[in-house]
Image (cartoon, rainbow, N blue to C red; front, side, top):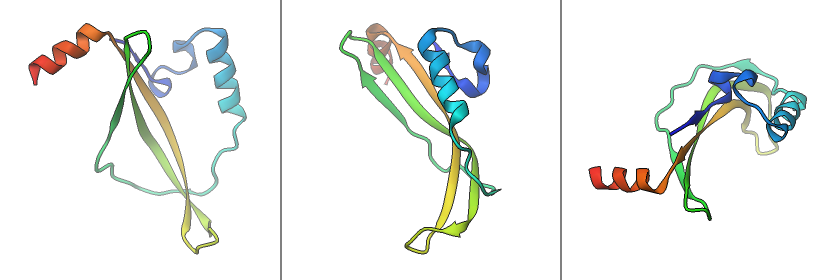
Length: 103
């Protein structure tokens, strides 16, 4: 089981041409503007995805920071920017089967 989390490992924890291009794209993205606002995570969720090769990926979005803009959207609602990371866990079919047995 492997966890890949850009926020924990940083750029040095990853390698490969595709990953390098991905991080270059992330660096070019405009950063949301606003003031940091405190928040409490009430519920976290994971998606379990079965791949065509029989393996699984578990994907979870983790919110790191929320910024509140001074602007409102056309409906009059506040605009928030969310900085986040993604945790991806690789699972083999036998590992999933073992987890199901333990329930």
